[in-house]
Image (cartoon, rainbow, N blue to C red; front, side, top):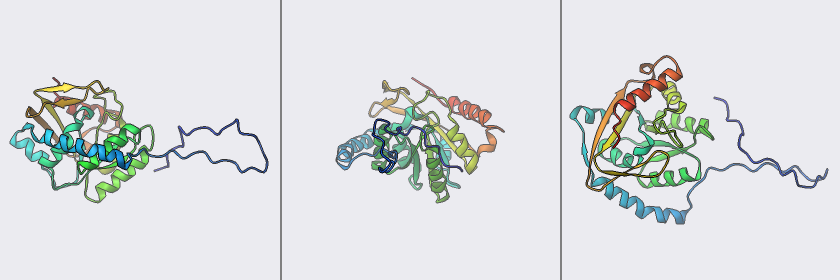
Length: 243
């Protein structure tokens, strides 16, 4: 795969005085945003609270779908909508504790907080999105799966529109031919936040009904990228129930 173009980098400072003797200044390198150590200290109790919060939830799942969630014959691509992200750590703990999970997270400042939060929940991450560092993140996901880890992606992230499947998950499926573990949750009592995806915040001790599909691989989605995206969205929407 070719390297990403250097789009989005700041332009050279044209106000600097010209001098034949002065070396040409190199453009600043764009850095992946990270959370500082002292901010990690703030996040740590929040992660403990979320663990206790989601552990209090009552999960409803059929025996068949629980078997799908526990599938370990091959590393899978975990596919979940962005507005169900708060459940990922608990779902991993309950149904896939034997599998390492590496999630794709935006390299932005918002993504830095999510990656740090995931780390506290024992979920690894690679940083990138369609707008920046996407190909590098894809390479890192491919390497993670080769090592035996599950890889996780929100097909409508990181900025939406909500429930719209982006090309990244389709490309990942085509390159890996990995099974796609698609899951979502219906919340019986939850608050919806004001974010673009209307993130779900379930009430403690409330009930969550899981819906799961396991697709054997990219070949089941269709012959071309757009058709595959439509089919994946159809499968995901078939199991998605909003409040």
